Length: 457
View (spheres, rainbow, N blue to C red):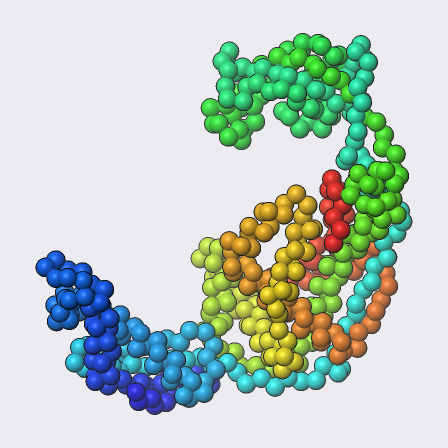
């Protein structure tokens, strides 16, 4: 193999590579000998088919297979020989090839830039610590209590009202005919939530135990069976029970039902979950503050192929007119992402940062614990999607790098309350609303703390 530098301009190098015909013929002979042991042709025993017969029948495809292998091996060797740090997949341009000929091709390579990291000593950032007020915790406790109501039977002659739970069997018809799902047993409905069919709840107001109630409703427009969508439906309901809500006593016993040790433990779990949501939002602001300084203080010449690939990934789901409309901004975003990725990776390598498989598994387990009732779904997702685990590994690696950078800079710790946190997040989102490359930092959704069981992270 002969390798020459054809041209070098900026980060792009073009190599001229020649593989002599004798080397190619030797590879062909090796492959034909391998196939002789495997090929089965009519009139020959397995392993006894002459190589000349194999070549006459499969020569073109075997040559193509051999050339592909030679291209992979020689291009890798050429890049290593010239000590080029390739950025992305090189492009191959075949010049001359064919049986009995030398293989001559050009290899176009975009290389990674040389990176000189500057000191982070003069960087500044603010890290926020949020104090969750007792009022918010108590409000959340009340919400959780309301979401987990306990009901007790009313007297037989007491009528149902909004807020009560009605337990009933039903039989339904559309145009006088039964249909799949037209019967139900022991259906529990809390009146006023309108969770069954629109207008269904209000027609059950006033019923008593053992009543037979006939009522009308309309099937939803998005019913899975199209023939039933928007159809008027008649229901005959036999009322089995009418129950009224029993106000939960928020005490240690209630806390145990919610999965905590006692009331104080439940309050602490709620505080931690709300605090975690705020921390996630505010940490992204701190991270942005650091990344802005890193990007501003470093100049890099970026490989064009990486920019093109990033733009392609970013705009894959967009229509052509949308791509064209935001072409300039998309290129700016792509360059920013690549630049920061290269700089952070260089810092990680310089400090020998790594992510172990155990760390990835631990993060997956953390996600599983944070989604009670959906553990199998989360686990299956990562087991069936290796790319998801790889992406998670990348996120952990980036966080390790940011954490190390934080330890090197002037980091001001600022204690704030939830109101101040909301203002900071809102101001950040507003000031960056015109920049498509900045994802909005969502305000914590405190309503997420409402699961049947409060998870312990």
